[in-house]
Structure formats: C-alpha cells, structure tokens
Length: 323
Ligand code: A2P
Image 1 (cartoon, rainbow, N blue to C red):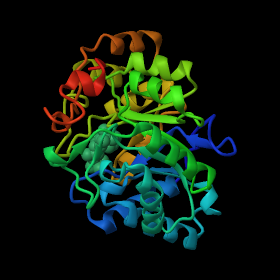
Image 2 (cartoon, helix red, strand yellow):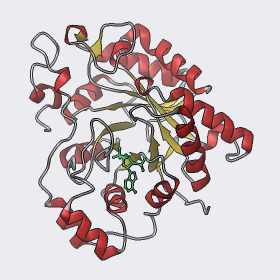
Image 3 (cartoon, helix red, strand yellow):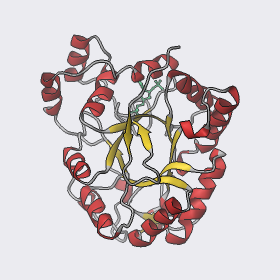
Image 4 (cartoon, rainbow, N blue to C red):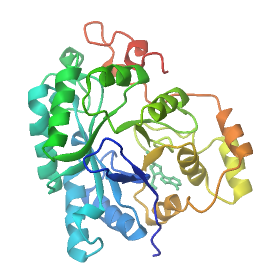
C-alpha cells in the first residue's frame, strides 16, 4: 500500500506551534467492534493517516489506544510524536474542577502521556457523574465558560495537551470565549459538508486564526444520526462523474479546498485509501460555484439540548442563528 502524504496546518495557539494533518480519521460510530476499529486504524496508519479523532463519550478511546500501541510496536510510526490525537470533554465533565481529571482519564484510556488537541465537545454542561451520550433534560446545566476554559488552558500549560479548542460552537460563542481567553482556541470542530457549508463560521474563524474541522463531511451515512442526502446528491454525483472521482472524494476535496480540515470515518481499507487520494487534483471554480448553490440543510440539530429550564430554550439560542 503506497502511503499518501497528507498536508498539515499550523495551530497558532498550540504549545510549540504544533501542526495538524488536514485529514483525520473519525471514530464516532454505533456499536463498532473494538477489533474492527483497531484493524482500521492500523490500515489507516499504513495508508499515511496520522490524525485520529476520538472523544470520551464515543467509547473508542481504548481501542484507539490499543491500535496506537500496536502501531508503535510494529514500527508503523517512528514515535508517538508522529501522531496527532484529539479527544473531547463531555458535558458531564465540563465543570472547572473536573476538566483535568477527565483529560487524565482519556489519556489513561489512550495509553498516552499527552493529547495533541482537547476540545470542549458541546457548549453545555450536565450533572457530573457517569458520562451518558443522551443527557436527561433535567441534567442539562449552563456551562461556566470562564472556569472551564481556564481549566482547559491549565491543561495546555501542564503539557497534558498541546492544543485546546471547542466543538459545536457558533461564531458568537467563540467571540464570547475570546473576550476572556488567555489562550485562544486552536480549533472549532463542527458539522460541515456541501449540505452545511458553515460559510459564516469559516470566515469568522479565519479572521481569528482558528482552524475549522469538519465532522460528518459525508453526512455520516450508515450511522443512527446520519443521512444519505450528501452522497446521493445529484450535483455532487455529476461533478464526481465529470472528474472521474467518487462523491466522497468530491466532498473531502471541497472541505480542503475551502480551507477547512476534516475527520472522516471509514472502516474499510479501500475507502480509507480512496478518501486520502484527494491532494493531487482540484475542483474547478465552476465546481465550487455549483456546490455553493446547494440548498443548505443541517443534519445534526441537537434538539435534545433544548429545554425550558436548561441553558438553551430554543435551537436559535443553541446555534445563535447559525442554523
Ligand atoms: P464505511 O466505514 O463502510 O466506509 P462521515 O465521515 O461523514 O461520518 O461518514 C462516514 C460514513 O461514510 C461511514 O458509514 C463510511 O462507511 C462511509 N464512507 C466513508 N468513506 C466512504 C466512501 N469513500 N464512499 C462511500 N462511503 C464512505
């Protein structure tokens, strides 16, 4: 298998100007068998992937850690420093006094001494205790953004993570964060695909030196929260056919070409390989114009975070109109 050279971007606020490979491998999946994930990560490393994305709530940290340990043992990578590993703080742990503990738990699961990037998973907190993917309405709490961010900064200063950032934050929520942050977020990881292009957020992040990472760039097809309208899009299929590429490659190339980075999932070696073959060709201006005309449709609204007594009373509140 020939390895692809994946381009990298500099994370300006990282400890030591860390670079991040623009194409990452995502590990959020329903009921994925640990051995399938371990095998896919090893295949991905052989194909040239170096950036792996997980989260405390995905249940994939342990398998990813196992795969990293095996890759090091097999000599597939020279050292841990050659990899870029992201994990995320779940709302149950998004309290100032719990951040470092939660990060240490992720490190323990991953068998690592440091993360490359640690993200606040959602702009909301929940009753401390067991992490649960679906949070009961009564457990939703407003986040102490200042206190949680200060703890994230402390984690970076302590070297537990090289960079810190956020996920699912609107431009307004980042703007608020920037008003008190002493270390600005390096990354905002959000839903982004040709069907949810995030133009406003991308412009805001660019102006503030923040890298946008797209999750579900293929619409997370095949997952319980995913959709088929991205890969079945007529416009994208026409562009793919004309270029002799697949729709997945068109989506991935589009994210890269508009200046964002991405975490894509595949547990299939051929598709992993295909998804990395997007750096030696281009979409034309005409292709980009056609994609920019695609009617927008957000896949993940996260209605379960809306509650009369919680911090967000409406989807407008949660997304600050970026919906
Ligand atoms: P599979 O693991 O069978 O390849 P997203 O990255 O938007 O979350 O989408 C992930 C989903 O897209 C997975 O179900 C994955 O299935 C599928 N997928 C990944 N790469 C491709 C591809 N090149 N062509 C078609 N489906 C793909």
